[in-house]
Length: 373
Ligand code: MUC
Ligand code: MG
Picture (tube, rainbow, N blue to C red):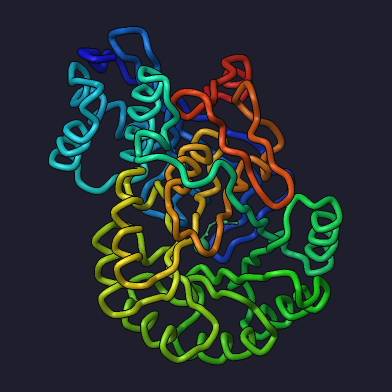
């Protein structure tokens, strides 16, 4: 691709149903909507990327229709004609000309890296310094909205060995009801199964103090984003106060967030997501900040489909300090897929495709089937 230019950037929206309703504090998902990016280079190579959020505008300040519009109207015209191999220069230009819109930027950088890897015949992880592992631990999120169903789901997944760690989504109900729900599931799966909890910002700091105290007593291993994302100092106070580790998720979106949180001890774990960070390179920068501050890492998801999940897996596989594993189970929450070969999951892990670029290929028949018209 040396000398190859960006010739065209196409976007399309794909809607895929979920296998069951997925209850989060701010939304109940019954389908997932992905914006797929197809970036065509002048030498015939195509790179693919994905921009995905959760629950329309309820999770972040970008939404699928807006991401498509942003890429089509502002980003594509800016990038067409630029050197496809100069990814740092292209992303710097994008940063200069387009404020925010990190989810869209992440999809673009993913597509550029996929194209670069395909040209050089190496996996994306190799473009980022090389993988330290070709498999990643993957937990499963129990979020059916019903305690008995969650227990049943957990027991089935433990029995078939697909997952050995669970994350529970809470924050939709009164905190005492939620704490009882968590304690019941922890009791059912037993002391050897790791259970984490994601409050998705739903608690005030004073409720968080009461709620986390009880979750800690119930043997929960990790508490994710208990309070509003803007309260960095509150996160630092909770991190200091409790023995159970506190993880920043929504709070640690950008590289600058990671720096500000690390400086005040806002969280003992960072949940990294390529979408929040605006791409894979920024994940490496956040990871370096965390390493310098002694903060542990977790590979987060925006519940992407296979394209975004594999992109995340490539960059996470280059991090030696991914102490808390990952939650890259997005494709498993969907009833179908839009790639030719699905990711393989088993024994609590996913296998990272090792072909050139992301190592996956869109199945255009499937894309046609689920494409929004
Ligand atoms: C989040 O906030 O972490 C990740 C797993 C899941 O079920 O929801 C997401 C979002
Ligand atoms: Mg979270």
